[in-house]
Every structure is written in structure tokens, then in C-alpha cells.
Amino acid sequence: MKNNTHGLSQAQLDAHWMPFTSNREFKKDPRIIISAQGNYYTDADGRKIFDGLSGLWTCGAGHARPEITEAISKQSATLDYSPAFQYGHTKSFELAYRITELMPDSLNRVFFTGSGSESVETALKIARGYWRKQGLASKTRFIGRAKGYHGVNYGGISVGGLSPNRALFGQGIEACHLSHTMINDNKFIKGLPNEGTYLADELEQLVALHDASTIAAVIVEPLAGSAGVIPPPVGYLKRLREICTKHNILLIFDEVITAFGRMGSNTGAEEFGVIPDLMTVAKQLTNGVIPMGAVIAKQEIYDTYMETGGPEYMLELPHGYTYSAHPIACAAALASLDILAKENLPERVKDIAPYFQNSLHGLKGCSHITDIRNYGLAGGITIEALGAEQGKAEPAKRPYEIAMKMWKKGFYVRYGGDTIQLGMPFTSTLPEIDSLINALGETINEIR
Image (cartoon, rainbow, N blue to C red; front, side, top):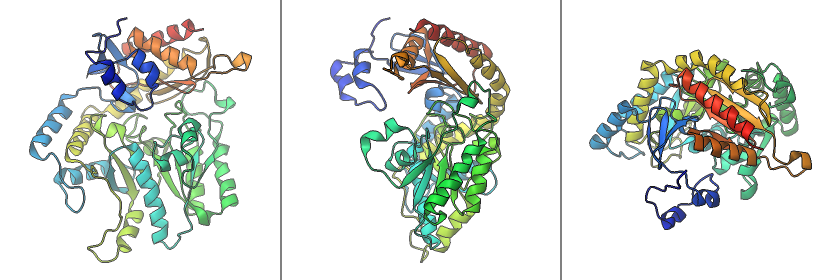
């Protein structure tokens, strides 16, 4: 295959310090995307590449949707920016209300951010501030989970449980972690595993160790995505909710990946029947077109801020971003949510998820695969580390090689740690699922 950089010079390539990228490797052999349409990218060689991760879990409705393009074009020509502080524009209020209509009852106050990382940071600050306003300033500690991913700000990496994202940067905020639920009893389970609910009881142990008077919130993803798609055991999230309620601890669901269709429902909270106190969202909110995120809070939390805010002209929450509720992002999100509703995409996810599940688990028996997990249109495959037999394990090497071979065959999948991750577009056809899974099985068997 040609090494086509689409006219970029080496100096231009070198100038960009790319995020979460092996920059040295990439700039020797760039993979340049020049356009996208529907479920496909086009690379600099003119090849069509099936988008097996919906962008970065972002573009479930497919790329270049004309409804969104029209909405942002019209908005940019009408109101391109509006000051985020002390003044408002109509679309932010329309969007906030639309979001609350998709939430479980009682999650009805929306604070806008620019990304999932900002949403997590905001939720953590709201949680701490809430307890201070309640007169419980000692409640500062957070509890996350091993293999959790909550973005890349200091709060996010502190409550997150992916060591490569934490080790380089030193001390974060005060946090401890529950065990993950990726246990041997759950290997190759389709959908929600039955084993592992007992792991939620570790929260009781942490409460006993630190005392509830010091704990502000527990934060978990309903389904852990970036660690390699780890569905919750049956009853696990409900048990966390029970323990948090018992000990007066807030429960935060990080739904940056799971909200707006990926699980086959509007939210993971709806799908799994558990209501948190705070929820973070982003990614699918705008179908990936423009950065945007949000935190959705329960009425009680909002009311606490309002009731203790001092004189009416004073700020109740001294927090926000220049691009909070950006007019163009709001327009994109409203159009994106219109598409989800009009085309009933969460229900489509639910309809085709069993086919995806059976196809994905058909890879069991391929070389190097040690586990397969799935829920909705999310799938994760654990790959045995290269050199594990000799005690010189390189867990990321085989997933990297698989992803690169898949790219050359016309498929984009995500590799992270020892996993291959799939996040199919909600608009995927059954033949597209077959094509991707067949190519993946072939590729895994090709590597040494």
C-alpha cells in the first residue's frame, strides 16, 4: 500500500504532537483520513475503510449526516458564539430540556461542558461542592474502579483505574478503587455475566476503612468501554446503588460511551435499571461532529446549590467553560438527537445486537483470543500477550499488529492495552457486521 500523506510535508507531520498516539511509529507510516460518509472513512489512498468503532464511540448515526451539517451551517450564520457566562441563547435551553426527556426520572438539571473529560471533572466538583453546602466538608474522597476510564484531567485519571494513564503524572486527587469485574468465571460470556455481583460489596469494605463521612461519591461506567468492553454482572450496579444510598454517598455514572443508544436504550441507567445521582455524557450527544459534553444532576443537588447560593446576583456554582453550551454544538446536538428519535436508533441497536453478539463470539477458538465480551453494539476481545510463555510479555504488541492489518484490509478497529475493541455504528447492516468479523478472525489467525 502507498504511503500517501495527501500532500503533507514531514515538517507538517512533525509539528502535530498527536494524542494517545505512538507518534514515532505513526509519522513513519501515516494513516491519513480525508473524508467520511455513512459508515465509512476514505483514506489518503482513496480506499474505503469501514468504521468499526463509530469514530471513537461517537458517530453511531454514521458520518456526514446532512441534517447535522445543515443545522450547524444555519447556526454559524445566525449566532456563531454567545457568551457562556451570565447570558444565554435559546438552543441551550431547548437542548437541556431535550436531554432531560431522555433521562430517568429525577435527573433533570443539565450543566454543559466541552468533552467527556470536562464532564467528569465537573461532576466531581459538583459532588464535593454539594457536600460542603450540606455542611459535610469532610466528604472529599472519591471511589473509582480498576480498569475504569474517566477521561484525562487530573480528577479523571485519579478516579480512573488504567495505570498507563496515571503512572506518568504523579499525585492526583484523593481516590481509591474497587476491583474490576473482569474475572475468570465470566470469560466468553455473552451479554451480562451472572458472576461477580459480590464484587460490589467491596464498597462496604472501603466505607468501613475510610468512613462514609469522608467519601463524596462513587464513580463507575455502567459498562467499562476503554478498558476493553466490560459489561456489569447482573445486579452489580443495583448493589452499588443500595450501598451508596445506605451510607449517604453520591453515585456517578460515567455514560460518555453508553449514553444515547450504544446499549440499546437512551442511557445505561435506563438499560440496567439503576438511577445515579449524577451522570456524565458526551460523544454520541453530537454524533461526534463537534466537541460537547454535559453533566445531568438530580433535582436535589441543583436545589442545594440554589438554596445556599447567597444573594440572587451571586454565582451558585463558580465553575464553567468558555465553550459551555456553545451555540453550534447545541445545534449539532439537537439535530443528532432528532436523528436518534426519528430513526429509532436505540431500538435498532437492540434489534441487531444479538446478531452482532453471535458473530463476535463466533471468533472463539481463533489464535491468541483469551476472552470475548459484549453488550449492545460494543464488543471487546482480549488477546494473549506476545512472549507471555517466555516471561517477556508484550501485551500491546499483538493488538497493535491486528489493528494495522485490519486497516490495510479496509477496517478500522481500536486497539488498547491487550484488547481489540469494536463499537459498531448503529446504522450497521448485517453484511457489514459479517464482513468485519470475518476479516478480524482471519487477521487474528494470521499473526504469530
